[in-house]
Amino acid sequence: MAELATIARPYADALFKAQASDLAGTAAWLDELSAVADNAQLQQFIDSPKVSDEQAFELISGVVRTALPEAGKNFLRLVIENRRLSVLPVVAQQYRALMNAQAGTADAVVYSAFPIDAAALVDLSSTLEKRFARKLNVSVELDAALIGGIRVVVGDEVLDTSVKARLEQMKSALTA
Image (cartoon, rainbow, N blue to C red; front, top):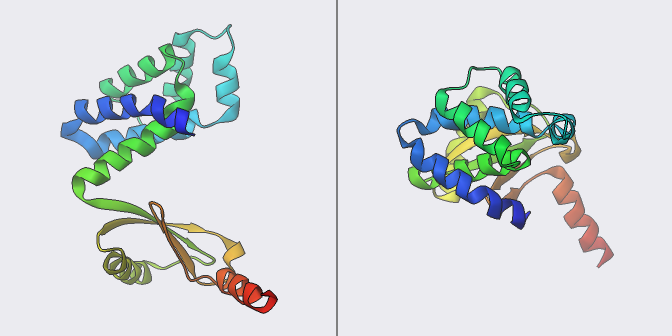
């Protein structure tokens, strides 16, 4: 993973500096490109020596849901020519980290066993912002294995109040 991060960093930095006027818009199309590039079948197809760079570009730009701006097209061509398509998910991750650092925010992923309604999410967000002492961009992912409660990941910090975690704690306490 460290190698991918090293390869991705210059791309993320350059894109961040070049697109300073539209950071959110760039993040949106970069996330889309990242999701498409993360497909194993697409990677295998594009790695074929029979597929030209232009064919790869046409395929990927045709698959993304929204039309790419000129900067997005140029970036995609550059990544394809340099054979760095597999690095796009890491580039998107690092780009988002640069955006968060500039805005003084952080991404928070809330894993929940059940869907969280909008009102509860707003309350949860404000509580988490107080707990982590910063503005958070909260997203929710369902994980039935938690049984109940939530697990929050903010960067390298984890707050786990799930039933699964409590059962594990009880298990280790009883077996110790």
